[in-house]
Image (cartoon, rainbow, N blue to C red; front, top):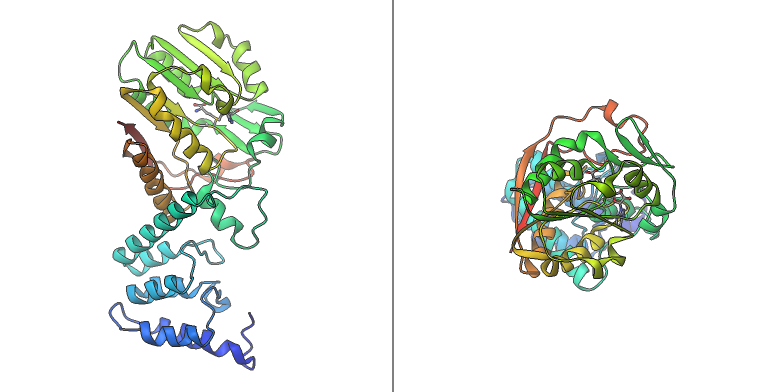
Length: 360
Ligand SMILES: C[S@@+](CC[C@H](N)C(=O)[O-])C[C@H]1O[C@@H](n2cnc3c(N)ncnc32)[C@H](O)[C@@H]1O
């Protein structure tokens, strides 16, 4: 759409924006907004004079719930972003409106849940989704947030271990040393005492596996799909470590070799939320009744609003499987630019990590 005021169909959109930008949280507005919408106002419009903010951004910032619900009903996208990739949820918080923020989170969870149920959720990197690709991907990708290859593509690339990082041939960070303290916490959560049977999916730098070994598990199964990682595991003697059993292959292909475990951890690469969800469907079959499951929670890890939606979505999906999720909050040090040097794209920038503790 163009903003040229001489274009006849622009007027309803401009009127809509003017109305929205003067609202207080309690101004009744549904009728007026609906009139502009029925006259052809574009609810997906991105205002160049407001760094690409959509009408929903403006409504969220003004804290007017009636405007927010009217726009959502008229087809505005809960996951719209402005030119700075700022979400509508962030606009609501900037305006100081927690109630509007909560409403938008619920809307996000509801929409994504429905899309998943219809089999339409979880965009893949190859999908051709023009402007919305980035915003949708940020909701559905697991690690890193974006710009990473599909799982098959990733598995065909050469990897390099350098300076405590595992990078693919395109400089995507597969795993980074700064995650070590998180991996220790994950290991403690899934193996709180010695003598347990544990499973880890995705070896990477072997951080979580080192911490699991320190917990002296009775058995320690590791699934790893990448040939370069597997070669490193063998070179480093992981196949001879106490209780260790390595299953070389994609987790999807070795499910029939799994048993029942007291602790399970999942952290792969190049996979999306629907892959994680697929793994979650198997968890009830391989987790002991008193066991603990956890996963690397990098869900939309560069945007607080999308992260909130993703966490609640995962909780709801696990709930459907009869599993209960508690998120333990871990304060994170700010990761400076130097941490991401040489890495194509940062996949984490939030101040708090929510460590999932999943039980029956
Ligand atoms: C982020 S790293 C895991 C890091 C690990 N948690 C650590 O503490 O170092 C992801 C690992 O999952 C492996 N991987 C990716 N897709 C996989 C799949 N479908 N099945 C099994 N392993 C996979 C990758 O090769 C990589 O080694």
